[in-house]
Length: 199
Length: 104
Image 1 (tube, rainbow over the protein chains, first blue to last red):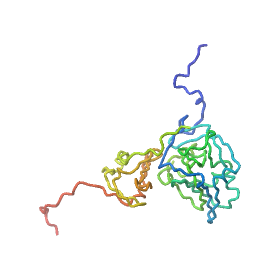
Image 2 (tube, chains in turn brown, green):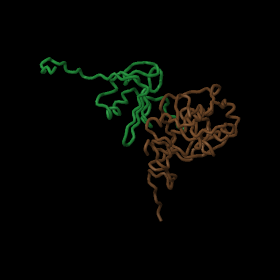
Image 3 (cartoon, each protein chain N blue to C red):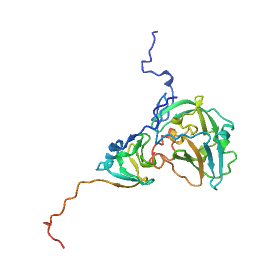
């Protein structure tokens, strides 16, 4: 039997990959931007969780680094239809950060340095589903990709994984964020192709 | 990790095509006022990030969001909450010449 070519454009490692509907595979790491890239010195960086009754839990960079870390490898799905598989991160699970937070709020509004916001249910941040990550592929997270630290919620479209994360506000009512108030879906499940309002 | 050019934006003329889908006039020629700092200037002078996931036009003075435009498959969302007002130039109206019948 002769050699069967996959063709010049063949990407053997793409074969058999199951992607959410409407997505295509990329091997680079596209950067989409809605504004200037914030530059936050680590000695002024702070992450906060603000509860619905006005209490704030804060972590400095050193305090974040002192927490137990995890190394999730996850697939990313952007609402602009690219997917990137097997991305390797290092960061702190939101379960760890929420361990001492007393709250019965059902909704979260994530806010970032630079003014970006995005909303999601609190339950989507817990039970091993979300992290504050500060390394990508073994290197410190570049500012273009949200460094020094970003939220990682890989089971939702990537706009929910807020770059330059600054804090999470816990709310009794849902408060749509930056893209959710401009036509994008309030929840954003890529497997249900929830791209726009009404999807 | 790929590191594309950062902080890259276009001027407000990048809004001309998408806004022409919505309005009968060229809105990039309009003078808009920023809600955040009060700067008044042509829409064409805004700093436009995007186009994906959406166009985000920011004030060249304070960097706050003045206009957002998201084009879905069957709808366009236009958010002008960062704009106090738009002054849109129009052709001069015809001046009545008094020849019309007096209906009073």
